[in-house]
Image (cartoon, rainbow, N blue to C red; front, side):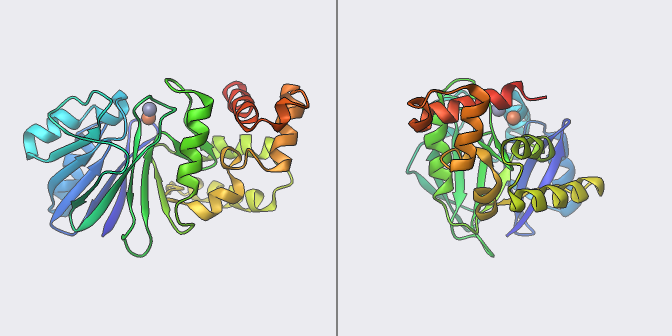
Length: 260
Ligand code: ZN
Ligand code: FE
């Protein structure tokens, strides 16, 4: 399979995968970049996958469905602006020769789902919408910190080689925060320098690699002693709160919300 990140708006990526004839797009917040990519590559759109209901993820769904007839898959618990096949945790279906597995990852929105292609070559692919970003995670709009932590734990359990296709290019600002949390993490320092080079050349920092995210992303490391200590210091957590994974994670997320 061929995997392409289509830039949209100021910092979104619409992920497209294809086999040189048919294509699948994930979270088309805008139809125009998708229509252009299909024409450029001589592709016909066969399916649309939606992770959650926010406009920057579904804004182009209706037009693309109407103009191509592509089948739409979306979270059973959310509104999608076109007729769609509702999917939920544990579902699996076949699209373009790939098995697609559905995970429920509530937190950013209440019904947010992620899609995993476990058999993709050369390594599995994860489309995680606004749940996991490189070096960060989504804001908690509709769910709770406990839900978001459980969702990230679930994604963290996927194979280390998984290619993480996040929906936004937030990497550099996320890594500035990550370095404030873990200034002496040498993997993080190296990765931040690498991503700065990529962005200076206008190249996406994504897909991220899950195994590396486990080494550098503070939101996947909220139980690490260094992260726990930094959060406790910053938020003034009590000794009891410091032993509570959800309390530490919630304080870490709040720290990031206010970080300039
Ligand atoms: Zn969103
Ligand atoms: Fe978004």
